[in-house]
Length: 156
Image 1: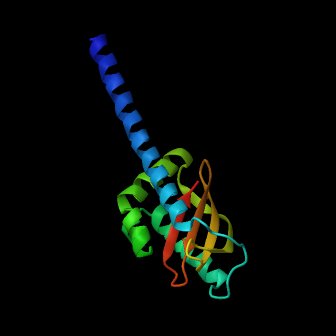
Image 2: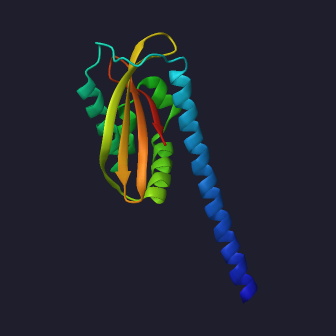
């Protein structure tokens, strides 16, 4: 009987390890997609083409969708290139990892917006949002083009 119990425990550990590994790979893909989309960015002054409060509100909306489990709604806020790089399933897996480590979302701690240029030299806005969870904080970096489509998303 003890051998079967140990075998069952080992199988569960292996299954959990595989799940954690898949989530880690997903997180790495999100970071890579964001880095590729924003490669070559420069500057910090927000362009006059953006309204700082609208950028913050848009970033909060995206994060609100994530913390509510509304992943498809979050994907709908993204530009075409971003949608091709990031699925609702990947978002779900990453938020599951975040909430597994940090607990439930509590509140926004701070928000800031800076300007950057994308790889093609077009102006973009980047919101950096620090959110408090039960067991810690997470930093969301959300980038937007002039059409206010999400073109970058990173959770740390």
